[in-house]
Amino acid sequence: MVEISTSILSVKEKEESSTFLELEASKTDYFHIDVMDGEFVEKNTFDKMLEYSAYIKRISNLPLDVHLMVKDIKKAVDLFLAVEPNIITFHVEACKDEEEVFRMINYIKQNNCKVGISLKPNTRNRRNL
Image (cartoon, rainbow, N blue to C red; front, side, top):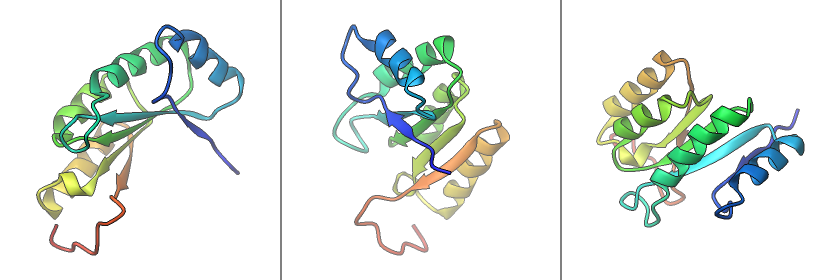
């Protein structure tokens, strides 16, 4: 089975509502939320994506797939858990060590959310992060 997670990163201002409803009508399976903080990656979409996530949760029953590209994972997870996402993915490179990776995995799972790990393309085998 194929599932489609549609990124809302390029939604045009003032067209959010119609875009989200059109995506739902087109049978997308998930809304993909690209969260960037301007530190871990250059672009900053944090506040806009948090706002969009809360809005989508009010108007749609489609799952939210949150991809965190942020330096402070715990803070971001706490804020996005409030919108009850179905999946939160974070970057292993944002963690200081392996222990923090597992702590975040468990924390996200304890909050009834699936968890994913993401790696930057040039990350090599980093057993000891």
